[in-house]
Length: 187
Image 1 (cartoon, rainbow, N blue to C red):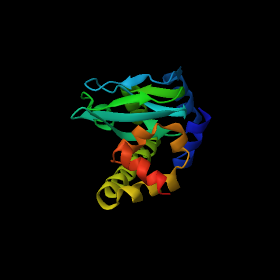
Image 2 (image 1 turned 90 degrees about the horizontal axis):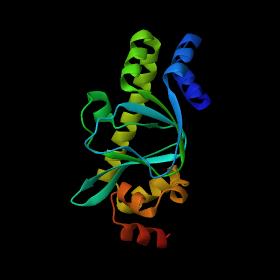
Image 3 (image 1 turned 60 degrees about the vertical axis):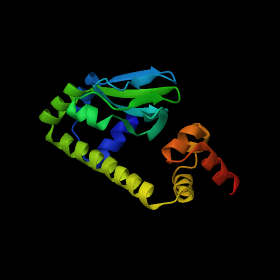
Image 4 (image 1 turned 60 degrees about the horizontal axis):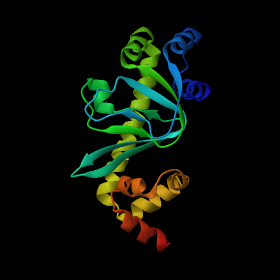
């Protein structure tokens, strides 16, 4: 809870009563790797903060497993459309490592937004940050070569290559595993 507290308080300080209520609302769980947190076709009913661990969001297209997001410590795990619209998800979310998550159900999150106006600021800033990351990712997919996308990931998150199977990284970078292997070999 300390990491979550630090992140939230940097965005907008919240009173102790908020933290007391949040503590009684959230659930902290140790979950083993390979656990499917969300299955395509089900509704995302909670948002989770990763205290420790790594997850990926993925979907299938023409029998291909396509990784859309990689989320790690201090990230939030969420299927955005499914969670906020309360509709069936088009993606799956799977843990790639043993993880510790702090989760809050959809309805309790809305209740906290209703009760603590300052918490809305936190939610907005976090949402803006993820929207910016999404836009940057889309730009990179459209404007950068496969090598440039690899180099960007390597410079921004070099440790990811020790934590995520290369087939998922290749998919995340929108390339075939063979292409990623060639790029890595040419370095």
